Image (tube, rainbow, N blue to C red; front, side):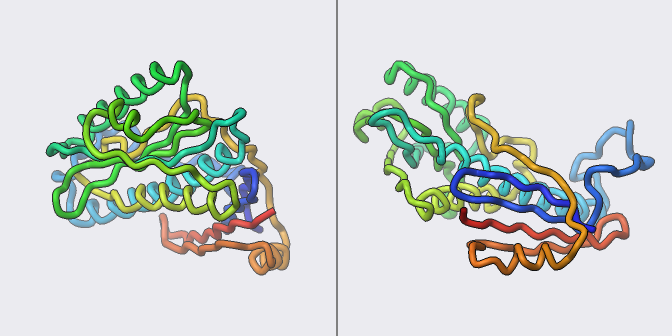
Length: 253
């Protein structure tokens, strides 16, 4: 028996299929419940390794959820002459602290909303430049009115700005979602584990979810081998003595 989570994200259907019962699990004794969490530096080598592995798995899940959220909201048709836009925001000064950078980004959104006299929905992911270590942002603005790149730079106030309209094709939407979600995985850093590596507006719409079971392995095989599959990945790892497996599959409609 397999558990599955199916999401309709507009132009695509996404399956997450697991080799365990996700929905009717029995409660287990949590020996660590109520105990204060150790700082990373206080952990043993094995505890550090476990902590890093848990964070990697959590980031993979978050990157998948981010991709699904982007795809669904890109599928919502913009109003009139508006369009979904991809922008890059850089700092021309040495900004290394993510909390400082995030504060500047939030202030930018406030100024942008004031200038456009509307509320823009957005998702942004931070990235650290390899050489300079400066932070910059990769951002999607949903249903955004036209704005000149020079004016956008004036509103940002911190450095170079690049803006592009996101192509309405399936490849355009998938490319934009892949581009942003990959930076979430790239920014794996123990020192930044308590900081928000991506920000999003509150009014984004969540894709509809269907949960259920697949009792026949041939059905899962048919899904994985469908001509409509454009992406699939298999995950396998040990957790609490259980061989945990997951298939992540994206199909075009």
